[in-house]
Image (tube, rainbow, N blue to C red; front, side):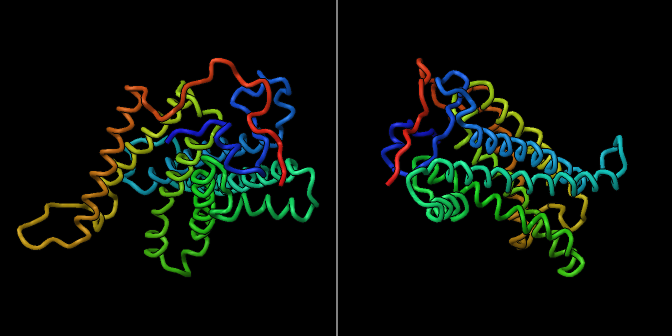
Length: 283
């Protein structure tokens, strides 16, 4: 999905933040004019990188143990818990700084309304109604609202049961997919079809390959696919088989995207904007 041009987004909504262009240093104001947005962006990218690490660790722990590991399984589990908590904190900081930028942006309304609008735009699904953000912001909210309970369920797994926790914890991969999708849609660093966007796509290859290996060689006997047999096959067999095929298709898709260069990015403008891409307006 391509981003809408700034002019199109501006027509969609009067109250919106003054976001930094992809090359803020090239503008007349410089990056200092957008420090809250840039800090939010930094938190967001940090959260995505930590999420990448925690997903990789989780897949290593849940699948067949590699023959050689530089550290013990206990150390990997401790790293996985630490990276998970760090990811949640960075996601919340990303959203909080985005809300702070919205509060700073409004200058002609009272504080109560500024805080409420910033809170609603940032944390209420479906409230943000401008351009690409109408899709990208709810996706990011979904990632945040799934990440917190799924991450913290680890600490109550003895109360809800290990099997229940294990089934629910599998949806962590959904959090990661939503996070990457949100970044591809709304990350100004990867708007354009250039190397940062290509690198972001390529970073997903190790995750999908490890996930495919985890599905093809599950550590638990009950999760192994096995032959379909001659009789009626349970629906669970078809679900597991479809999951393996879907992940294999994603691996192929990622390779095609990287090789072809058709990754959904838009062309960079010939002349970078001299000012902010969105004029400050109020109702």
